[in-house]
Amino acid sequence: MERITNEEQLNNAVAHCASCIQAKFKGEDGKKAIVVCGGTGCLSSDSDKILEEFQNLIKEHHLEDKVTANVVGCFGFCSQGPFVKIFPGETLYTKVKVSDAKEIFEKDIIGDEVVEKLLFVDPVTKEKVRSQHDINFYKLQKRDIALKGNDQINPESLEEALAYETFVGLNKALHMTQQEVIDCVSKSGLRGRGGAGFPTGRKWQFAYNEKNDEKYIICNGDEGDPGAFMDRSIIEGNPMNVIEGMMIAGYAIGAKNGYFYIRAEYPVAVERLQKAIKMCEDAGLLGDHILGTDFSFRCHIRLGAGAFVCGEETALLNSIEGKRGMPRPRPPFPAVKGLWGKPSVINNVETLANVPYILKEGWEKYAAIGTEGSKGTKVFALGGKVNNVGLVEVPMGTTLRQLIYDIGGGIPNGKKFKAIQTGGPSGGCLTEKDLDTPIDYDSLIARGSMMGSGGAIVMDEDNCMVDVAKFYMTFICDESCGKCSPCRIGTKRLLEILEKITDGRGTLEDIDRLEELAKIVKDNSLCGLGQTAPNPILSTLAAFRDEYIEHVTNKTCPAHVCKKLITYVIDPDKCKKCSVCARGCPVGAITGELGKVPFEIDPMKCIKCGTCLSGCKFGAISKI
Image (tube, rainbow, N blue to C red; front, side, top):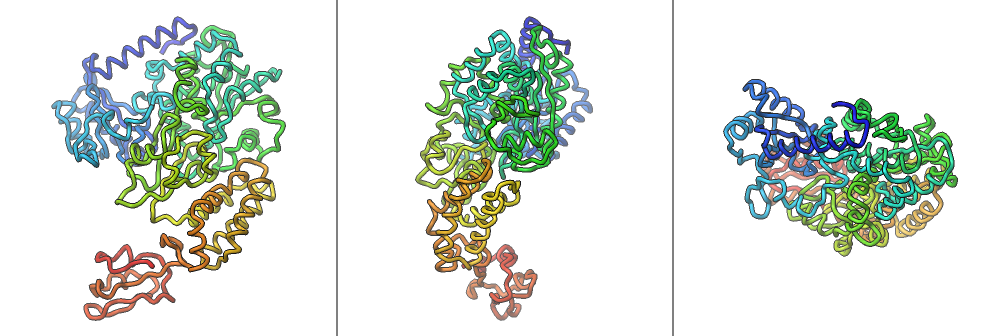
C-alpha cells in the first residue's frame, strides 16, 4: 500500500478498501472467499493447518483468480470451533477438522452445495443453522465496538482494517483540539475496562493538565485472570483498532510514544501486533506528521513475564522500566508521575478498542448504549459449566440470566446453576437470586462482586464453594509480590484456614476468623491485588455459609469435591464383579473375587484419586 500522508489519501484508501471488501463478501468480484478462525483457541485445534489445506487446494485446482482463503480473528463461539465461513452467502461451518477441508472445497466452493454435517445444530429445535446471525449465541450480542471486524477481516491486512474505517476516528480527532477529544470521551461515559471502571476521560484530563514535554500512553495487555482471554482476542482479531485507540489517546494528552505491555504467553497477539505496527509505519500512519498534521506518534512493545501483579498499573510501570514488578504507593498517581517519572495514562486493551468508535460515530451514539452509569458494551470470556463457552460482547445492562441462558445456552447435562464468578480472583460469586442483575459496574459491586476485566466463570451443583474460594486464594498467594504485609502474610493465613476447613480439621471459630482476617487484608493492602483478594471468600461466605458450616460440623463436602471429606463406595447390588476397578486402583485399595464376590474399597488405603469411579461402566461406584 502507498503511504497515506493526508486526509484525502486516507479517505480515498478507506473508500477503495471498503468497496473491495464489500465486493468480496457479496461475491461481486466474481470470487468465493474462505475465511478461517485464527484465534488461539482454534489455532490449538489446527485451524492454521485447515487454512493451509484450503490454500493448497486452491493451487491444485488452479483457482487463484476465483477463490481466496485467509485468516480472521476469533468468532467467539469457542465450544464450536474451529470455524470456516464461506462468502458470498456467509455459510458457517463449525467444528471443522483438517480432513473436512477437501469436502468443503469440492462441495461448497466448486459444487455450490452446503456441507450439511458441518453446520451448527440448534440444541433446542435440532435444526441445522446455516447463518451465524441465526445462532442464539450471537443474537443478543453487539460485536461491532471492541470486537469490530473480529471475525470478518484479516488481522494482518492494513487494507482490510481500512475497509472497516480504521483511522477515521483518528482523523476526526486530529481536526479537534485536545480538550475537545477528551470532552468527547468524557461525555461518552466510557469507563476503564480493566476492572476498576474509572472514567477514561477523567484519567486523560489529569494527564493533559500536567505540563511536561514527555508523556506516555500505556496499553495494559497483561491479562492474568484465570479463564480470561478478552484482551488477547481483541489484539489477535483487530490490532489496528487498538493502535488507533492508543494514538487518539496519545494526541489527547500530548504523548508522542505508546507502550503495549503484553504477556509473553500471548505469542499470536504479539506477532500480529508487531506486524500491524510495521504496516502502519510503512504506510505513514505511525511516525512523524501523521496525516499531514503536527502530531507524531510511535508504538513500542514490552513483554511481561506472566506476573499477575503487573496488571496493577504501578507494578506494570516498574516492569517496563526494567524493575521488579511491585506496586508503588499512590499518590503520586501515574497521570502525574508515571513511566520514567513522566505523566502517563494506562488503559487496558478493551478500553482503547472502544475509543475509535466514540470518535468516529460520536459520543451520543456510544452513550445511548448501556445503562445510566455504565455506557457501551463489555466483552466477557464466558466459561465454566455452561454450554456455549466463548467470547461475547454485550451491551451494558444485559442481565446475568441472559448471559448464562440466552447466550451461554444454560448449564450442561441438566445440572442446576449454582453461581457465577465475575471479576476473576478480584471478584465474587453471584447466585440464582442475582441472575436478573444488569451487568454494569455499580450493580455488580452492590451484589458483592465486580466487573473486573471480564472473566465470567459459571458453576453448577457439582462445585464446592469452599474449594472455589481456596482455588482463588491459592492463585493469589502465588501471585502476590510480597511488598506489603497484609497481602504477603494475610493471604497465606487465609489459605491455611481454607485448607484446614477442606481437610476436615476446621472449626466454627475458623469460619469467624476467616471472615475477620479477610476484611483486614481487604482494608490494609497496598494495591488492588491485595485489596480485592478476599472477595471470593467474603462473597462465598455471604451466599454459601452453610457449606462452610457443613465442612466443619459434619466433616462432609456437600458437592463431593474436597478429597479428604469424601469416601468412595461400591454398591454390591450393582457390582458386576468384573475387577476393572481393582485392576485400575494404583494403591490396591479394592478387593474382591472376579466373577464371584462383589468388590469393596478399603477407606484406609484409598487415596481418593477417582480412578475407580471413572473406570466403572455400570454406575456401581459413588462418592459419599
